Image (cartoon, rainbow, N blue to C red; front, side):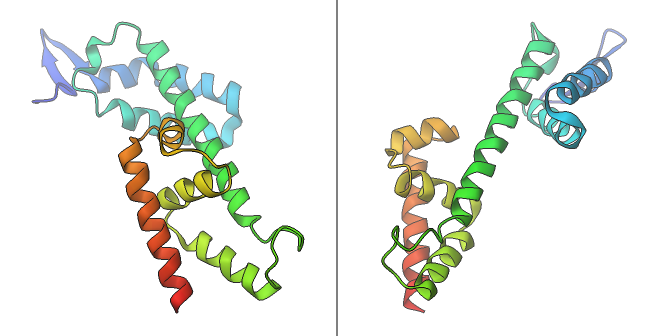
Length: 164
């Protein structure tokens, strides 16, 4: 294959399939120890999906370290997204935080929650945490230009919903 993900070289099956056979049990066990059964299987699967995008996975010098780092990054991203989701749901804060009446708070919460997740993450990090585009990009692993694009889309969505 062109990307080297599954190639047959010198009579040995190499690539992602060989790595999966060799390290999948180890990776799943390591993730279960750290995150419990519920998240470990999803994290392992997502880790292997990420590995599939590598051109020559068989050439990894330290596959265990690489797999664990990818899994840990995915776990951190999931945790961060969960925190953002909880914050979005908590937009209907106490009366002293917003001077709007209850119906307005519900409407604002619904609008923010209706944003697609990538747009909502950027919106909340900008508007609630006060982060810059560069800081948001670093935290989410995207470019500041992508942050700007997502924020523009989020604001347009919110404005369109308020006009309805």
